[in-house]
Image (cartoon, rainbow, N blue to C red):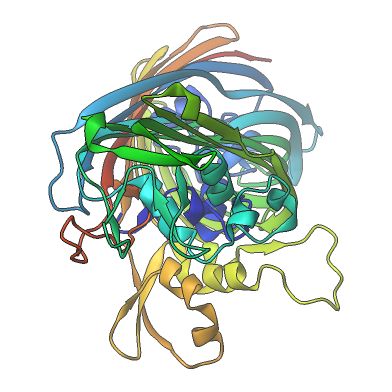
Length: 570
């Protein structure tokens, strides 16, 4: 994707650096369905197919198609593989990529469905009631990129961003709660990463040298830089399902879903002097000057979000003729409560350890409400007697309806999330996905399956009345220019990001009640670009303003899923 995610501060509209922006709302709202090994192996193209407890998650009517009760448990694991490349200046000169993997055990699906026959020959012949827990997203991700940079520095960018804040504010531990200074700047200052020079409100990083006349400061030598990020957690839906079989021709289902999610994000940046003698630092202490040399700076940010929500879903499957099945579903927006916690950390070391410093910020906490998109899906399946089936699904989700709100908002008060909600409205659009699946019975007891999924991104950008490209971040930065119609958005464009999944699996069904399914699935995500720190106005040693961008990290992510379903019919 062409958008650039820039460090922790892009996550923050609030000084404390929680989430509450469009990117995180999309992360929390997206579904990358797991399910049973059978439904995953068929690309989750089961809107019209039904028959197992993976399909009942996609289409509530799917449970009624089975014609029996069942219990299934699906253990599995995920493997995240991320290839990362480093460029010290913008996106111009990426190094060869390095790979990093991270594995996690998971439980894609566990559920119980019971069938109750009515004894009628027409009308509602039976109904199924089920309870299903299924995974709808997995955040497993680990990235590590590194390189050498002699022109910009994260510590220097902190100093640049702190311009204008009084030193008394930055040095005061009470400022975390009693000032508008961003927590990352407070933590970095109190962790020894930058200090004052010149007038009050002017700062230089400890990775910089100040010119003889004090008019500018610059990075005097090469720095070894490393950017590491990890994401962990998953989104799981607890579903209460009711399915009705009407004359073996129409199947209707209802789900009440209680999704919960835990999302952990950790970001670490390391910066060290290749030759510390090029980074002299003079400290004034008791009216005397003391010389030391910068060695290393470490900056970390940890974020945790816990979500709990509720939604309703209705689905139908129709058999207009033998072998042909048509399906459709509608899911309401999910009403979430989001609880966030976050913390910053900064540490700086020097050749003389007396000047070493470190600081943790307080742990920030915040709760708010969020509304996720509504979803609709349509499916067509054809069963070839008892030999197999083919199926195709189409699903859409409208992310422009995403909305943040305060938990206990006074309706007479102004919207605290006005900027974020308007950004969601214009820069998040409709996402589409197409799912294909097939199953072939090699023998009455043994089946092979394959599936494919293609999903588009809901993120978009605009061109304005001047013909300029406007991203979500550009819009948020100049929000009131657009809100007051001093500037106008004209034409929307979608990013051409695509997420693709490929799945293969097999199934075994005994003559009794036991059955077993297995699947291996590969999901390839669009490449993304990350900036460990913001671009800023930097100088070279001669005092010339440089046209240099901060580093970029290019990540290419794949996710492997392997799962086995053990099931019993009754």
